[in-house]
Amino acid sequence: MCKQFSRILIAVAVFTFVGVVPAAHAQGVKIGVIDMLEIFQKTDKLQAISKQYKESLDKKNKELADKKQELNDKIEKLQVQRELMPKETYEKQKADLQSQIQNFGEYYQTEQKALDDKKTELLKPVLEELRGVVGEVAKAKGFSIIIKKEYVAFSEDSLDITSEVVTRMNAKK
Image (cartoon, rainbow, N blue to C red):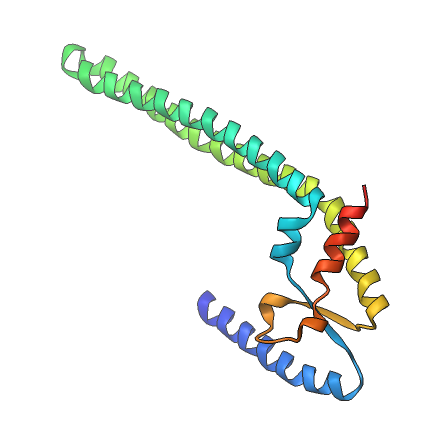
């Protein structure tokens, strides 16, 4: 059901775009393109945020891997000692271990959300600045609309404002 809805939504968007572009061109609307992947790869501020996020992610992943290994070691130890301990003791330790595993899963999800929230917080002001720079370049070049290059099958190089946006973003400190 969800896949079918997504396909319908995409089809409507494509048909709308196909209908809008010729109509926009007929009305003198000038459409430009921008390569967001290149923007993210070549803009100093976005690269710094990416590096900071990757460092945080690597640190958190190491911490989580260590905790996971600790739990795995406890599981192995309990399995080895299973035959040597009373059934009640085993069941109690098993339940305690299952609780620790569940807590680890919840902790993992909480930490992942915290990292995602931090990334969003770091990106928000830079993306707002980027939006402003894109608007400035678009106005200077007479564009009415800027579309992500990934959504366009073909465009002339003269319609691409990516390099000018990168230059302006990197000039801002």
